[in-house]
Structure formats: C-alpha cells, structure tokens
Length: 577
Image (cartoon, rainbow, N blue to C red):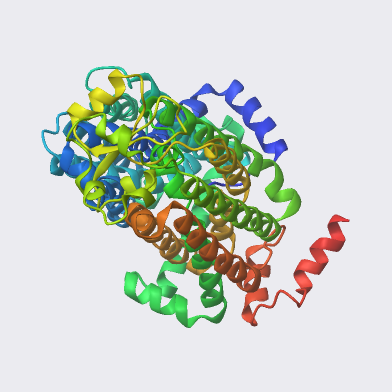
C-alpha cells in the first residue's frame, strides 16, 4: 500500500541534496520534522495488521464477527478520506504548519483512545481519529516539504517523505513483533504511535510556516526571512521573484476555473484533455488498490494464518518480509521510473502482479484440498467437547480441517502430534485451546496445517517485489504530470479521493470475501480485477516520461491510442537515443 504522492528525483538530485543539507542542516531539520507526518501515516496504516490478532483474542465478539474486524481496520481509511478532503481547506486557510499540528493532535488522541479502549467501538473511534490525521498528513507533509525546500533538491526531499511512509509501515511490524509477549500487546502497539506525534508537535511549534503560504497571505517580509535560512544570500531575491511569478500565475488559474469545488470539477470534465487525463489518472489509482495490495498490508498476519502459520508471533514475523520488500521497492522505483518510463513500468508490474495472484490462488486451493482430515478418535480424546456441527453432520467422515474452521461450524482444529495427520475438531473455547496446547499440539482457528504454507510466503514476497516499484509509486507520479496546469489541483484531488475510496472498499470487504469465496477464490478475484486494470492502463494511460505539461496536454487533445505514437513522444525518444 502506498498512499501519498512521491515525487521523482534522479541521482544528480540526490547528490545535490546531500551537499545542500551538509552546507545548510536547517533544510534537513525542516524536511525531517515534517516527514514525521509521513512516518506516522505509514505506522498507523500498518500497525493494525498485527494488533488485530490480539484484539480478536481479547474481545470474543471481534473474533466472531468478521464485519467488526473489517470495520476496525478500514475506519482509518474512511477517516483519511475526510481528513484529505478537509486538509486542503485547512492548508489554504490556516497554513501548512497549523495543519500538521492539528494532524498531530488527532494522531495522539487516536493513539490514546485506542490504547485505553475498554470495548471494540472505542477502538473504532480511535481509528477514525488516526485516519483523519493520516488524511491530513498525506496532503500536508509533502506540500510543506516541497514549499520549504530549495527547488534543486525538492524532488529528493519529497521522495524521502515517501520512503518514511513505507519505513513507518516496516517499523510498525517490528513494533508488533516486539510486543507480542508483553502484557497489553495490542494496546502498546497502537498507543506507542502517540510518541512521534508529540515529538513532531514540539518540533513544529519552533519551525516556521511555509514561505509560499506566507507570501500568498501578504506576509512578504516573513517569507523572505525564511528563504534566507534556506538559500544562500545571493539567491534569495531571485527566489522571491520566482515565487511572486508562480503565485500570480496560480491566482490567475484559480480565477479562470473558479473557486467552487463543484465548478472546478465540472470544468475539468468539460475540458477534453483534462477529461482524458482524469480517465487515466483515476484508472491507475483505482487499479493500484484493486490489485489487493492493502489486503496484504492491513491483513498480512491474518493471511499468514490462512496459509497455516497458527502462531500470532510467527504470523507477525513472516509479515515483516512483505513490509520490508515494500520499503525497498519504493527506492527501486526512484532508480527505474525515469529510465524505463511510467507506462512500461506499470504494465510490467501488472503482469507480475497477475501472475503472482494466480499462483497464490492455486497455492491456497491446494492447501485447502490437502488439509488434514478430522479424526473421530482424536476428537473424542477431548471428551464430549467435539464440535457440535461435526458430531451432527450426516457424513462426518468427509470433514477436513477447512470444513471444521468454516464460519457456520464455529469450531477449532487441534492438530495431531504429527502436524499433517488427522486431528480433532472441537468446540472453540479458551479452555479447549489451553488443553490442546498443553499436549504440545497446535491450535488452529483461521487456517490449517499445510505443506504449501511456505509457497504462500514466497509468492506474497514476489507480489510485493513486482508491485512496489511499479504500481506502488508510479500512479502518483503519473497523476502529478498528466493534468493541464490549470486543472492540476482539482485533477489530483479527484484521483486521490478515488484511491482512498477504492482502498476503503477493498479493506472493508477482504475478510468477508475470504469467508464466501475462500482465500483461493479471493486472490483469483483480485487477479481478475488486476487484468481489467492492465487493460485500462494499456488503452488509457500515455507515456509522460520526458514530456512538458504542455506536450502532455497537446497529446491528450485528441483521443489517445496506444497504437499511435505521439509526435512529442517520438521527438523525446529520438532525442534520448
């Protein structure tokens, strides 16, 4: 899952960035302080994956009600949609600094509420608070960094914010693993996010507002004072002139399309080039989510349990693989996106994603078919506690572990001393779970013992490897380049809302889908969605590598066709040979 814009930056820019921050450490202070927002964004969207395992143990109603688990996970996404929507207004009205401070208050309040939650609905309230903070941070942190950074290294510093998002997700899995044996488990996992929020709040209090926002509000002298701390003295006036020109152009654009959101959206879809850009921009954002990435990022430990790894600690530890590969992939993307192009990288990524999802579907199907049988002898070993659905079944000899764990059966599987031999299907109670473990057996409630489990881990890892450098980051880059200048704000906003909404749909339905379709059917369904996404990318998304905004707009004035090479693209290709 990569939500949030990631700006491209080449090797030269990273070298220049290192030299600039070495000369002027104040620049890095600004970027890292704001980047904590990106880190919190990543942490709070990733930590719930492991915490959910222990929330299920503490609240039996959560364990029994799939919709409640999905609600706890997805309410942060729902909050993020509203946070992003209000974040733009807060940014423009009260400033970037104030918006970051508000996000920190929401992060801290959400972490505190979740840590002390006595009942599940209080956790949901905390998740909504955190989601509002995530939505604001996803907009404000990169905006503040870009406006408070020297233009020569802006892309590198904003890219760092993207890395902090994936880094926050990775650290959340480490924190989950660290607290698996600590009393309070999930309360610590969720509550510790309040600490970075307090640190950022303190730092932002002593840091300045964005110089660009100050200039727009007529505070020219304050803006100049901040630029003097960022740029060498001889460059300050040139930057002031450039900012003046940029702000005037921005206001002129706002005047041409109106200030009302509804009016801007209407004009955007009424403009031929912008309409085609929106088809492409929305298409890649929806495709990014409907390949199922956030089922992996939000439910990774649960998927590991579906694959046969019953231990919470083992499931969380294995999930580190997917999170770590996602963080590495965001770095790989920076190296390849300008070399091979946006369109090609997405198409290759989608082909890899579809292949991995099909293989995962086969793996989970084989795991289901070869699940251990139910032994009446093993079940009777636990007295009259045999699963009632199994005991009353017309043909109990046909039962295997998967049927025992079906929702309608509501039972648990206690493995044999030989893990893959027939085991016991017994009532799902804490007492019987303890009795099963006391005999050095393994207790299963989500997935069954399987020799195919390691293949699920391997192909989940491959899925992340092919997703992260392509579909993980490129859709955001495409959306930063494809819209005509006068519609960049509204176009990017529409695409971002499409991304968050798709994210919400996927995260809110994953567990329900696994109940009705099984893990195999669910991954196959995502493979089907991915194939539709591949078709949409092929026919709707042009290559924007190396093109100016004006060239992209000219290309989209006519209906785009992947079989007709655009003149501007041809010229760029010939120039780079």
